Length: 261
Figure 1 (cartoon, rainbow, N blue to C red):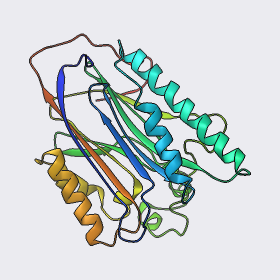
Figure 2: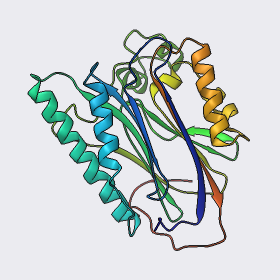
Figure 3: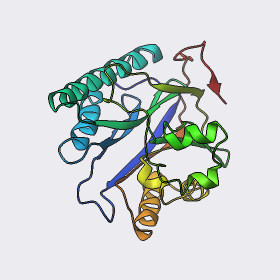
Figure 4: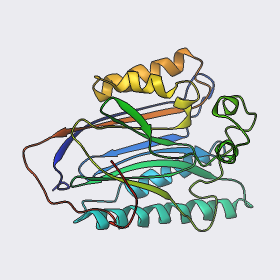
């Protein structure tokens, strides 16, 4: 049994340690039958960052098939909270060492989508040829941009541009940002760790996914990162929404929250 949806989904994901690091602390999960795709970028060094990102993926791999959009959201939040508790406990057992993972997730049910994120892993939406970043980075540099103290151009070379201000596992309690919307045929979602956006612009992401199948888009983006030095682990998941004959009732995740599109 799979989720009820008015669409079929083509998806593909790639993950690579990059050109500098030997260990890949990124993880990703694609579970289209559950309506879930996620990228997790671990931090904390060997035997810590990879443990954090793996914990997120392992907990979410048990999400199963939900009966409604609110049920899917509840299952997702439950498993993220479990992962957070597991990572936090590991950190405390190691004397309070910083261990955690950024996260970007896409959930779909019926004609609705929800994206969730913490840190600087991102979710993009390509719709009608226009690429929009649905997530908003939890980083020091983004806070400076929001306060008008840095321009986006200055932010690209800011010394602390990679410092994240939120992640799974770094605090006992967790609060995840979310964006909701309605899916349209032809929509393409891109989930990625910051190893992609460190080397590839939004315009280049758009060009790679425009008129390409998910596998080709992932391959092109990964090759571009590696050709430019790949200073970090990089993970990319591309999800394309195609129509199918059956129509279904709308079951929004939460009618009271802001919607996209």
